[in-house]
Each structure stands twice: as structure tokens, then as C-alpha cells.
Image (cartoon, rainbow, N blue to C red):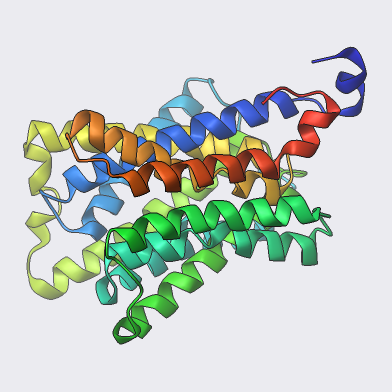
Length: 312
């Protein structure tokens, strides 16, 4: 990066873009491990145990001094509102939405999150985007939708309740992406992440306990932890939850929400590659075409930064 570009760009922008790519890669790989964990228990219990592991890791980091936390005199109401959008709102709406819709429909609708973020960022943050950026985001969204449609997985009108909940989940994620930009002015990345994960763990635990108490199956909540494979999966997913939370909040404190959202669909490309490499899942021509559209869309969304001197 040139010295003139360094003077123009805010501190940490180049690192934020690098982390955005890493974040997409980690999330893409995580899809496969989430799928494996569901062989042992239901989605809600998996989410609860995943948050428990993440909160334990962050608590150890805080008590050991690896991260500094200070909430005194800060607007906790903003942080609570942020946590209600993500992870609480997003995961709750997504979990219940997938009960009434297919996973393929969830994947297609989740691809709309960058468009929702673009809209909310332009309204509330007054983020200006060029015509090229708008078209590039649409192109990356189309790349994801193209892959699912070619696989024979469209959006069925018979699942309207689930589709509505999944659309609301997209809005919740977009709201988080926008609000995190302003919240980062008052809280550090570690403080935001610790609070978000803590709220996610507390609420998901309440839901899990209520469900098991109603069914008389309280012991089944922790029973899968006796399986070493599942235990390792949960520890890994908890660690990923911590890493992606820290990276995501740092990224949103450095670059525009509309630009960060373009990287969301990149995780679809990574999940396809990981499935082919580790699970030997087949790759068809439409996977390659859709992935190319996604990558071109991500690059196109961030071309202005390239002109300013950052090498993506």
C-alpha cells in the first residue's frame, strides 16, 4: 500500500479486509461441522452448548487478562439492542424458520442479507454506494441463488411461514451490521463480543431448559457431551464463535457495513470447496459458475478501495 493511501484510509482498514476474507473462510468451513454436530442432538441444544463453550472461552480470556472488559459508564442499552439483533434475533428466527422451510430455502434467503444490509446502511448510516457496487452485490447474491436453483432447490410458496421468519432473520443480521458501526464507538471489539456471546448463551439456555423440562428430558441436554467426537465438535464451534465474533465486530468498526456484507456470500464458495475436499461431495458446473459470480461480486463491491491503494 502506498504512503498516500495510508494517509487516506483509516487505521486498520487493510487488516479489516484481510479478516473479512478469513472470516468468510472460517464460516464456510463451519457449516460442515454444524451439520456433523446435528447427528448427535437437536439444533437448539447444539446452539446452547456452542454458546456455552464460546462464553467459557471468553471468560477464561477475560480472567487471564488476554482481553480487557470495562462497561462502566457506557451505553449498555445500545449493546443490548445489538445483541437482540445478533446473535439472539438472528439465530432464533433462523432456527424456527428452518422448522417450516427447507435448508435450501434458508440458504437462498440468507444470501439476501447483503442487499438488506445495503439498504439499511444507506438509510441509517448514509453510506453512499456506486452503481457498480450495487450491481456487484446483486451479482454475488445471484451467484448463491443460481447454485441452489440449479440443484433443484427453489423457494416454495407452501413454506411461507418459514420463509417469512428467514427473511426477518436477514433483516436482524442487517440491523446488527449497521448498528455495530455506531456501537463500536463506545465499546471495544472484546467488550461487544463478550456481551453478545453472553446474552446468546443465557437466552438459548433458558429456551433449552424450558423445552426439556416440558418434555421431561432434562438429562438429554448434556448427554451428548459424553461422546468425545461431539465434545470436540462443540469446543471447535465455540472457538469459532469467539473468533468470528471478534473478527466480525472488528471488521464493522473499520469498514462500511455495505462492503463487509459482500463477503457473507463468499462463505458459500468455501463451504462447497470444504464439502468436496473433506466429505467428497460432488462439484457440478453450476457450482463453479455460481462461485465465480460470487467472487466477482465481492471484488466489484470493493473496487473503490483498490483505486485508493489497498491490494485486495
